[in-house]
Length: 194
Length: 181
Image 1 (cartoon, one colour):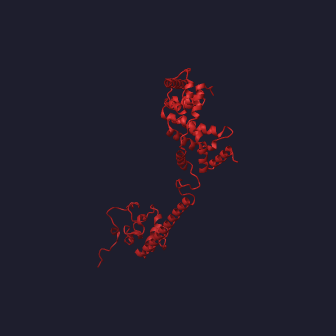
Image 2 (cartoon, each protein chain N blue to C red; image 1 turned 30 degrees about the vertical axis):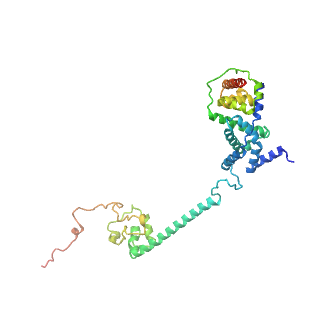
Image 3 (cartoon, rainbow over the protein chains, first blue to last red; image 1 turned 45 degrees about the vertical axis):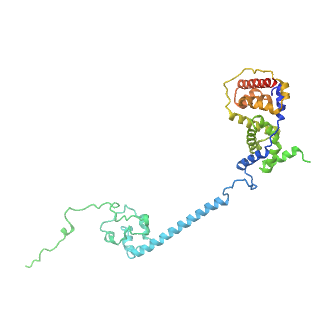
């Protein structure tokens, strides 16, 4: 602190005696408005900004959304299951047993009987499975339902690996070209009448 | 009978609990005291109102940092209002560090004329000083800070503070000489 000169003491005393303007209410209104923003009270004052959703509001809303999503997913999956089974039965009720079962396990047990789960097993069939061209699949090819007409499986239709040229390696031709099986057939030319 | 100190203590407790009524009570209790400080750093009443509103919002927001063992609530509130006043002056003009003085010229200021003048007349002369000179003069002549402290507060060198004080005294002397005639 410095030692004040006489005139400084006079100025200080004069400034302390300055008349105070009557602005207390106006200034308080501004302070209160700012406090309502920065330090809102818990007494529910009229100027308080509305509070956002808290507690149950957030968690309840989120929980309802999750539950609704789970129900919708469950129902849609169930509906798809029912439609798939129904359509398979309608389209080719007799071929399900013979064609598709043989397609799934042609090497191990070609004579086994299929079950109702056969259509769903198509999706996990390994494309590396090599099926001979003379297998029953190709014999019964027209019996398979056309893919584009299917309303059951939608965009998630499993590929028909057995009919696709890309998925199975082309069979290597054996023998001499130009000679067919009929050429090896032994047919008696003429009956010796003599 | 509730004393003033007890009343202030009660208001402070209410303010700490963020009670609006207590905050208003504390504001009104210190309105005159704080306004007299704010007026020293302002050009007019509207500037003073700006300083007051910002200072009291700061007071209520930082009341938990007030330590009664370090000083009275009056000194704490005065410091906050003063800092707001200095910020207000700084916002009006950048403090230049280009001018410095080694020693302050001490022109003779006629105290007799000052005593005859009203407080508002004296304040009007001070308000017409350039903002930086205004701040240095108030801090030195009224608040009693030395040049090192003023330099720290305003972010200027001691020499610059001395230059501003010298300019303030010269201006004050000229104005008082003019009034004398």
